[in-house]
Image 1: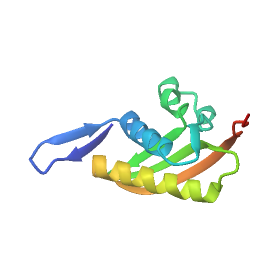
Image 2: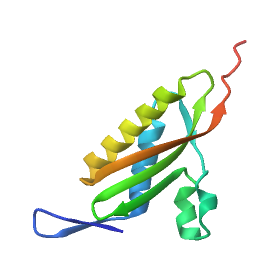
Image 3: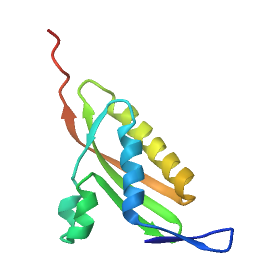
Image 4: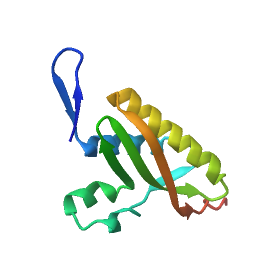
Length: 120
């Protein structure tokens, strides 16, 4: 749970899962991304953490700084480096805009390529 001091004098608590959800939705909006993968889930035995890591997003928060790792699958024939850059920019912008936190890095792991559909 991340706490943000509100300018109105109160505090705002944001769960890591909400940040992961924001990142997931932003990543899926990028052209050429066909899905998210659970490539980071095997790194932990904590079932509560694995629940949202399986969606392909790993969140690490220190103070008001966020580091993310996002696992994606991409469409066959696309430029992976361009898609990765787009995902990084979208995820960073979405989290910073919605939460006010500072995103230090968004690491991308491309773990699968989805084949294009055959034309009849």
